[in-house]
Length: 421
Image (cartoon, rainbow, N blue to C red; front, top):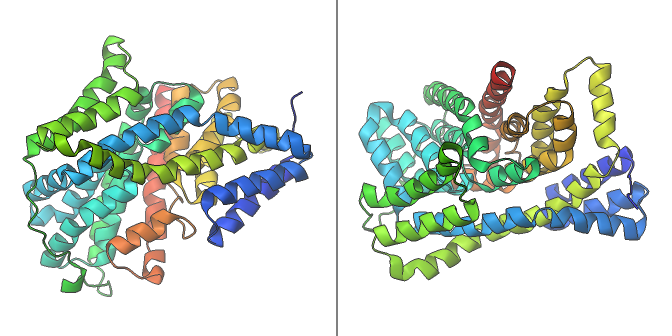
């Protein structure tokens, strides 16, 4: 028998999960506890609540499998120095005069080829800080350049959030990535403008010698070897929209990692690099399982109907639900992946029933999830601040700029939908 939970139950459960995350309770446990309490308050009973939580988590398994295999590519790109080499070449080619643009583009590309957004920032940070010190830029300008570039790359990447959204809407991953190319480019442009303006601030935090990473005399691969893995992934994923040949990301992403390891002469270390990559994605995988429990409760509640009724009362079009749900859920969880997943799992049905195409709805949710996803109760806030040795108070001051960058891509995604459908 299907159970429908009350809207208040779902909202209280979500609020409890947010409270626990803010109190530093492990996010996956926070989401599970919130789901359990929300289901009980929402009238599902203990058995019905647990069954709905389990069903919600089961819906995440295919995404989790793809994310786990993507760790092979991420691990190889990082450990072979390929990610660092790609960013280094981009910065060198564009030169010191265009250093902030180079930093943004480098982070965007690293993230777009499958490295997680926080790892992309951490990877580029040593190069960006060294360049920033020479050019006389402050930490805020350099960090925004990296974060904005990462946000732009994240909405066109085969990363966990994109995989989760494509699964929820049952759309091709490549098509979803391609849908947000224009929003990504506009977000990049706005990032460079904001970073440039911040670089002119007189009271910014200067980059000191203590902030620079000491050289390990590590020999990086040549640029073509570094690019082999990402190129293989892009080509394999592009086969479906171009030739109708479907290669699942579960195959394409690890295969790209294997090719990269071979091309860089590190094939013998593939097992170690894969283990490292798994360590980087296991947290996201567990988080998604926890996310599935609260998503299951929200999806089975009256929240969808009530929000749609509210939109109708305000005379707002149904498609607005996509970007707004992405923004709110990502802000609530302080996570692009969790926010995009909950929004997509909850509202994919109503959006498609309202006539919004699955790819467009997914793209708008995905872009919306980058607006306020970096709030202090999430790991991204602290990981990125730590990459440039920035205090929490100083890191907080950058949140409005990050939100503006995410809002740019969101509005662009909405505009793309209105123009092309």
